[in-house]
Image 1 (cartoon, rainbow, N blue to C red):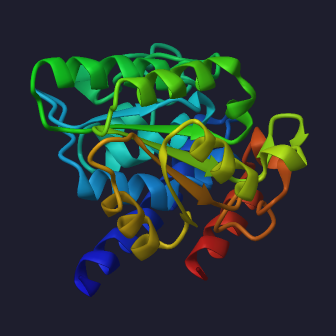
Image 2 (tube, rainbow, N blue to C red):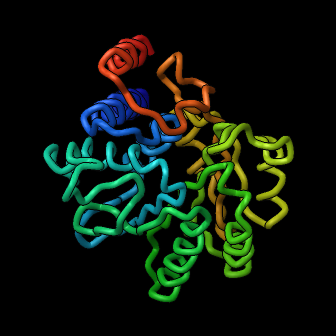
Length: 267
């Protein structure tokens, strides 16, 4: 188990560095903070579920689309996307822009930009899997700020009513959204209460603790969908970006890039 955790930890570190590399190479501003908060979450998902490009078994949906840099980075780290493709991010003619564009051949299941849509898509896939007697899983990552969208809760109650025990959602609770801090009624602790209230099996954990994330996924239910409420830090790994909402969307200059790389090497 320790060997597995160390392997996933190395992957999360590589994802974090790749986020910075791709962002800097693009020469454009990008959504960095909310991508860095997801590194361990995506490392665990892509190490513990059977996600493939062709003939997918388990399916991953990124609902907080502005975190696409993290998804692109894990796709590159897992060899779903070639370096040339990944490092064309936000350049003319690229397959990859600031938000996901569906391209199943490259491992991107859905397009989105407007928040609140991914869970509905995931619910539809989970219902389809049930009807086809497919025992694999659907995993969706949403942001805490995204949970202000009413469509999230419409999808949540639909999942409960259909007993979608093949559906997992991870709420990336980094405490911030585009225009500031999360309201006190949508904090990590309050989020756990809300998903419990909608009838989900709920596990809260440190979203940067790989062992805790693995355990949270294992504590699934035979009758309910599972919500993993992950407490994270926006900008995690880069000291001057952590909990600094200025880095929700920003540009890496040469000096800032090298300072960022130094910071993540210390973690």
